[in-house]
Every structure is written in structure tokens, then in C-alpha cells.
Length: 353
Image (cartoon, rainbow, N blue to C red; front, side):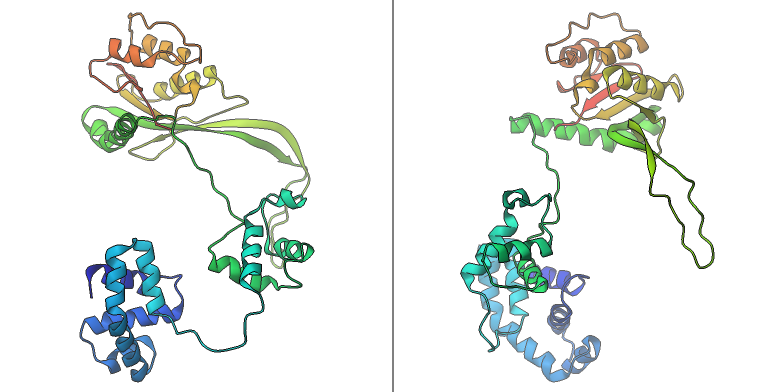
């Protein structure tokens, strides 16, 4: 057994999501590698000794093929090969009800946006897929459980979605430098807090929070009755929540709630955060690249707080203050061009998109 085989078998044997038969067979192979007798392995996995011997022999027969896959293909492909080696051989039975073409069309349908079919939903459900497949006459009929099995085999989850983020920095070397600086800020936070009285704070906003008020008070739980909540409510607009986590302690220092997320709101939030602690302390603020995080008002506030008299330059057309040049003028340390280091109370680091 190679190290990678042992690693993949261990993942399968200790997985909470792998099928039981794969967990048992992976455990058999691992325990066999430890030179445990078939009878002892059988008691451990809940099988009989003859079945344990069968899977030991099958692993020995398929070992050479697994070595080739391990050397030539990706880790994901190798894991699939291991799972296949631990699976049962195809059994004879009734021919499949659906052709390969029909199955392909069903999976293609699941990859289409629902609005293309004129349905007023954003994500497919299994029931909607079954109904649409029958309307398009891809199949005469299909059960929801069968459709779900096809989706599972293809690893398709049409009911889920996630966001992704594209970097605006096209130079990989510059992007790497920015990432390393942000990581260095988090890594150095405990030392800066203990030795230099410097607070490292991560700030972000949550916008569009609905301010709702229930029309009637919630009725508390009592014996024989669960808590009852009134379904009608009054809308009081939306609010923006600005949170600031101390990286070392994990506590919220001075969160703010307001109707907008503008330049003045963020400047006030930073000023409020600095005012809550020791006035002689230094600060490192880690933010993303939103324009208000690099605004003219923020640079002026930092300069006034730190009693800096240097010429900070003018405001750019995109609304951002020239932080790169300002940092070079007022900093005692050389920093990459996307950060602002001032000698007294503040340090702003922009996280790369």
C-alpha cells in the first residue's frame, strides 16, 4: 500500500458521508495492511470472515491498476478509482428505463435557468424538473426519486448557488504581494497587541437590513403550545450595519447602524472606533476595496488624528484619495502601494478583491 492509498482509504473509512459498504471495505484494507487476521477484522466491521478475505483479494488484484492512476492522474481521479475498486461489480438485471440520450437531456435541463422555460422561480426543484421534462417530452414519466438519483450521480445541485469574486489586479506578482501583506497583518496582530499596544481591526458592512416590527407581541411558549409569532409586521425601511472585529480578541468594538453607507458614515465609524480605546494606542484597519474605504475624507481624518501637516494631494476622478503617494510621504516604513501606514494611530490595509 502506498502512502496516498493509505491516506485516501483513511479518508473514506472515517468519512461520515461515505456509504457504509465503502467505509467497511476501506477499513478492511487498512486493517489488513496492519496484519490483522480476517476473523478479528470481521468482528470489527460487522461482516463475516469470508467476505473480509474476498475484499482483501480484490484489493490485491486491483493494486497495479491503482498505482498507474495514482502516478498519471489527479488526486480526485485517484479517489474515484479507489471507490470503484471497493464497489460491487455490475450486476445483471432489467435494462435501464431511460436511454443515455434521455439522461443527458435531463441533466442539460437541470443546468438551464428556470426562466428559460417560462417558470417564475430562480432555482430548480426536483418536482419542477420532473414536470418540465414531461412537458418537453424528454421522458413520458419519471419519478422524483429517479431524477434525484441522476442529479446525485452527476454531482448537480440546482437548488444551490454561491458567490465568487474576481480580482481586479491582473499582475500575479502584485496580487501576491497584496495577499501577503493582508496575511501578515493578521499574523502579526497578537504581537502588535502585546508589544506595541496596536489594535488590529477587520471592518465590513452589511447593507439593506430590513427594519421590521411585528404588529402584535410574540406569545411565549407554554405547556402544550409552542411560541406563537404574529405574521404581520410593519416596515421601517432598511439599515446598514458596520461591524468591526478585533482580530486578537474577536470582540466587536463599536459597531454602528445607520440608514446609509457613505463616505461620511465610514469616516465616523473609524473615528468612533479609535475613540473607544486608549488614545495613545495605534490601529491597523483591514478593509476591502470599496471606494469609501480609500476616500478623501478618511485620509484627512487620519492626517488630523495623527497631526500630519504634509500635502496629501488631490482627489482622483474615481473618488479615491491618492493613498499610495500619501503613504510614501507620511510613512516611516516602506509599504506596498495599496496600504496607508501613518506613524501614530492608524494603518489602513485594503484587501485585494
